[in-house]
Image (cartoon, rainbow, N blue to C red; front, side, top):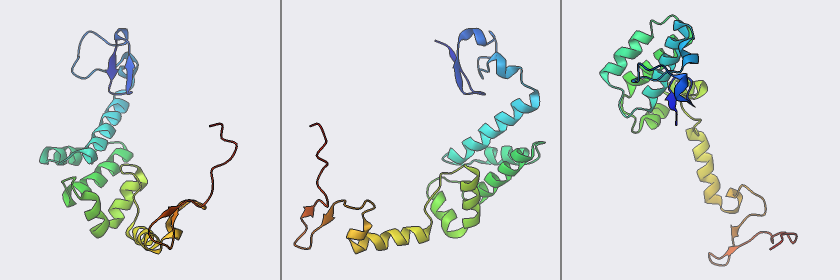
Length: 166
């Protein structure tokens, strides 16, 4: 059973690690990388973790401000983006909804960069709600189940294929 290298994200055998520094296990291959690359990877990992945290604290904001002065342009830009989010909505609860209503351009940048998954916009949700209200047109697959006009009985649009072995 080996150890986990936080830098490359792989489980490596014990022989790939030195006997010291067990607090932050880094394999020998990652330790051989230049210092700038190691610092860049650590900064990217921190930035990604701040978005997932429940609360972006004052210490996290200080770290983001320090990362805004980093040498790498990508790290500076991402740290500035997450710093804007931290100043607007530091708590994760209802963060996306607030950004969607009040700071849509900031949310779109987060989705574009990949820090957040793509989310349906308000116009898309309104269209889905209208389609659900119409009934049969809401089913995305043609020939899928639909409600009949007599009561609420479910009727299948097509029969199962006959070549199924069971």
